[in-house]
Amino acid sequence: MGAEAGNLTRRGLLSAGEMTVRTGRHGEKVSLLGYGAMRLPTKDGKHANGWAAGASQAAIDQDAVNAHVDYALEHGLNYFDTSPVYCRGESERVIGIALSRHPREKYFIATKMSNFNEMFWPLEKSREMFETSLKSLRTDYIDFYLLHSIGNGGFSTFSKRYIENGALDWLVEQRAAGRIRNLGFSYHGDARAFEWCIENHAKYKWDFCQIQMNYVDWRHAKEVNDRNLNAEYLYGKLVENDIPAVIMEPLLGGRLAKFNYAVASKLKGMDPSASMASWAFRFCGTYPKVLTILSGMTYMQHLEANVATFSPLKPLDRNQLATLEAAAQLLLQNKTVPCNLCQYCMPCPYGIDIPGVFECWNTACTEDRLPEDSSAPSYAANRRRFLADYDRAMPDLRQAEHCIGCGRCVSHCPQRIDIPARMAEIDAQVAVWRKEERHA
Image 1: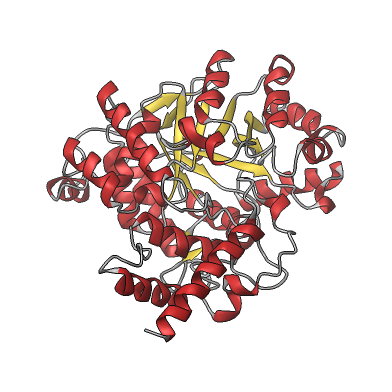
Image 2 (image 1 turned 45 degrees about the vertical axis):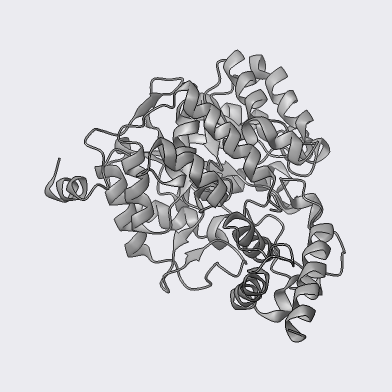
């Protein structure tokens, strides 16, 4: 352990052990913590992740990304997940620069065929996307290549993106040629797309699958939206077919890392020093068929803290799992919107900051900051605090009141959120609180 790592250990940021690793289908030794390159740091100290209010339009800070990659590799994190569409299309290029400074055998690259736009559905255009990824990432092969978000838009869209155009068959050929080492898919949305992939596993021999998994979605994803599939079911299907699982959204869009009095009281009793996020990561890592768990880490302190959790990761026991299930049920009682800030709904043609509105609302819900019953003594103070946070988070023209309910965003949402309806609910409540504040 180097001097820097030793100092971090003494300050309690790093565990004394090494990064936990899991084994892929072809013997790859993959770090259980994966680096999600969707929220990369920018020159102004924020993150690059599309059009949300919290996202910066400043240039990505290449030096900061380089430092992240160096630290990750030094501490055993070797799986880097990106996409042609992340960070306004810059993620692959920036990650390629950072990784190419190290020996190619030291890391695994995961990227995707993100052919969401119909212009990329023809096979020629999908092939161009793959070739561009190779160039951007400065490599001649991809370690883990995914069909991106196969259920997004329904089964018909999935079929047109990958089956009818011959793209999937072409990708199988690239795997046979060694240009793809592991071929898999990431799943959101339509259940039929997931079931089709499982039913055709004997033909395509999936090397891995990326699913949304956390201690809320484990048993309650379908409860939030009847068209969802619980992570417990998804993981079970993968285990049955001997397909390693890559985990996305372990923190449920950051909601499981934020302080909540009711939930924290349960978790702090088990380990007062553990962070909210560490419990969520340990939940996912407890399951042995999980190959790696992705986390978007904008700041170095996020990376340091997460590396500590995974060095090594301590699986949860039965009592701890039961406590997290109780915590999940408490969280479901909140008024949160199940938005994971993926940005697929953006840009809104009318300028609404959809993820920004939901993030502000969810932060207030998760941190118990929404106004309580009007009879409570703290009602006025909480109302005033929420409105101040809401106005500070985004310009007026990007707030919920300007949503016209066109519904163009709905088909793009992997979580199947009725976005116009939730916008209307938030706007109506905000209008009530603004009126009360004017007459206070």
